[in-house]
Image 1 (cartoon, rainbow, N blue to C red):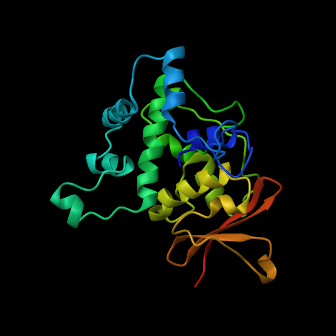
Image 2 (cartoon, one colour):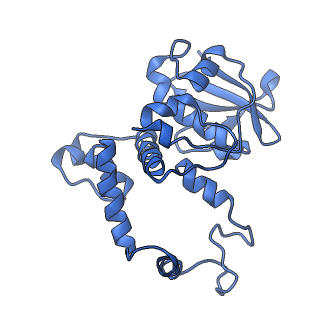
Amino acid sequence: MTPYPEHLIAALPRRNEFVFSSQTAASGRIEEPRIQHVKALAAALPALSLHGLRRSFGTLSEWVEVPAGIVAQIMGHKPSAIAEKHYIQRELDLLHLWHVKIEAWILGQAGMSLCQCKPVCAWWRDYSLDWRNATLYINAMIKTFRHKGLKAFFETGSKAGIQPRHAPKLGVQLLRLDLAKSPVDMNAPGWDMHPLTANLAGHYSVSVNGNWRMTFKFEGEDAVLVDYRDYH
């Protein structure tokens, strides 16, 4: 999930176990999303179907120069070209990076932001076409770092203190950690998130690449003592 919808979903009222709850439906959840879509159109928006929104997303993605195969996968389409079917394997982290880039550009064109709290880490500037119009803000935050190189990467985008090949995945993990409110928010597929023991009891670890791990702990809803380690 990209930061903007995550921010919107986090603000939804928690009435029951469903994310999209309903006070009127017998099931307790929204069962027909088109009803709210029609209400939004009637209030202020031009006529635009849900399928039209999908086409708009695909069209706008071209402005960010996203490979067509990546856009198709983000939209849930099966690979069509021979290369896409048989030769190109994309991890979720790669799709997420491109999705973040698309979102930043679209929000920038709309002049939108999340909330006036603090800017998202500087590395994300590389993934927007016009960062001045696409600055996003968040509530949750990383408060302290143990690793100076990782801190510099987060704050300035410098790769001098980290393995440069780890930058894309570390960028996604740091952004997610900066948005996270508890360790469970870091339990993403393929990250092998788990609690640590012994002298690091209370800390958690996620996999970066090979033996490399990013570790952290939480104080309330803030991440602290964020570290970057090579476990041999």
